[in-house]
Image (cartoon, rainbow over all chains, first blue to last red; front, side, top):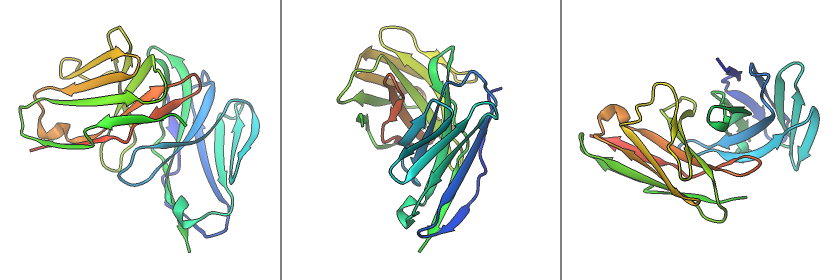
Length: 113
Length: 113
């Protein structure tokens, strides 16, 4: 069973603070790791992805990956109310059906003004 | 980023009827497309992988005779829910794969009465 664990939240942070979202995964065959944001009633939108251990920055977002610990995180700096959404962690691994994404249940983030 | 469209965005149908949902990659070609289903407050569940020119690969527990998938071209995949029942009411989302990741369509909300 390929498990992806995320704290369901809600994670509440004040506007301007750093939001830290965490994810652990069980499939050591995972090769790349994706963060999607999903607003209520909408489909997921890609925020960023990371392949290598360490940090990867993209604007206000930083993804961190530690394959040895099977841990990936997303930091959101200067959080805005518009960042309030559910954040989905999705490791990607080769499988029977090509490179399928295995989604966690997501962490609900609430940024308060 | 790449653009994926879905049609229709929402559909209401009577129990026993069939519903076809289209997924198109608008500015790129996608050999592989994926179909997901999401029930309220739950994570995305992969239903099947659709490969252009070949039969779809279904996930365990998904009835291939009920959810017919056709990937006739590199930019179009269709999902037909046959003999729909109220328990099929859900949010159906497709995604199209690039070399790096998957881009999601806006989703189709199906309500079966």
